[in-house]
Length: 618
Image (cartoon, rainbow, N blue to C red):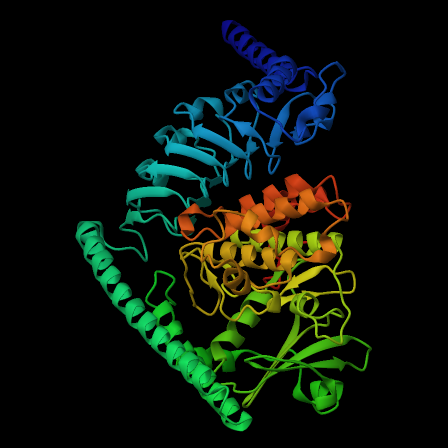
């Protein structure tokens, strides 16, 4: 009897415990007060210059009202308990909002692409106890990475890239059993890289002080070897550029003097011959520039021209030569719409009516690398401001790339029309082009998984569709900023940063405003550095833009361009900063800017990869 009584008591205890647990789980208001207080404190602690959080109205006391607030995801739509907080790309300023600790059930926090600064809290593991995803990328967080982050044992994804974090990578990170993705690129980290288990996606490129990891120097020799290479590189680079400068000056002086002395007395045929010889000498010097550029930290990491050719031959053509031959009427010269250094561009029409732009290379062996990069980049990355690659053909010595046809052609045609052409871009069209270029380059640098740097941005490589939406093309010189990302051909083309693209974009912005190239503007102002005084450019502004009521906008774009063309790369902004500063100015004045398509939305889209390996931005 006593035994039966004990069993009954035990069963009663279990039943009571179950009832208690069920009541805590299914009570509608569980976590309500603290979660509301959490969101209030977040809103109060952050500057919100663009009023994205203005919709956070706490006067409503109904269940589940906070689930309808911008960026808030709840465990259940009828329950005031925050599951994820997504405040990406809102221009928020301030320090890490410590009030988030009151969202006691939070599992995901995304504060990426804002202007948050200061240190990451040292006790962050007590603030985000149950976090599985933490994204603080593309901000201005500084200081060291707190080792206590390793106490967030539920973390699956941790992104701290594109900040100003210093110090070492906490070795405790290697013991985070659930961690699948860790991104630390583009910081100021130093010291040894922890030995992470295989199967994890770990990226830490563009941290010059790191050592010991894959593709990095051993830590024992890192310090001395880095100093030796740095000094050797500086000496070699200085000598190479001095030699190149002397040769350039001598050749230009000889050509100028010869043409000046003989211009009045030389027959036109001989004068043309002299000009041709001088231009030929200059053209032959371009390979020297190319080889010198390979000495820079932007050096190409590849296995040689022969291996690149083999990789191209391994590619399976997506379009056959016969159908392209029919589409272009046997590559008729009447269908030619452009000539570049790689070959001739033809207009073509398939049997189904599709309009194509077909690039047929003139020397396949000379441009194998460019073909490979165009196929690998444009074949995988899709963006509204990047020209789509529809297909390609590799057939014996034939190398043909097929793009979407853009009816308004190159931007350069509109900025530098022939005398017989009366084409003028409106200011609205110019701003649309400028924003589209900045959007594409910012997406390439900061959002897409490969972090692509174009390295050949100019008005020649910007194509315009029927609505003057710009499409970036010519990716043959592109490289990648993340050395830990390899494509399926086992290739890595590595570059340290995208500051050259920033400079080139600034040059095109000035060209959009003035109708003159940067070189022409320098000659007009007799000043090699135009960035210090934007007023020197004002006299060159396109006369068609004057007196239309938007002079202030024109001057603002000139200032943005001057920030981009700073002579020292470290003084230039990032492409993301350029894009954000431009949208901040023009988002209210021009209806074609759509915040729903901004970089944060693209970031969400790009995180998923399609079955074919394409990275898509809608």
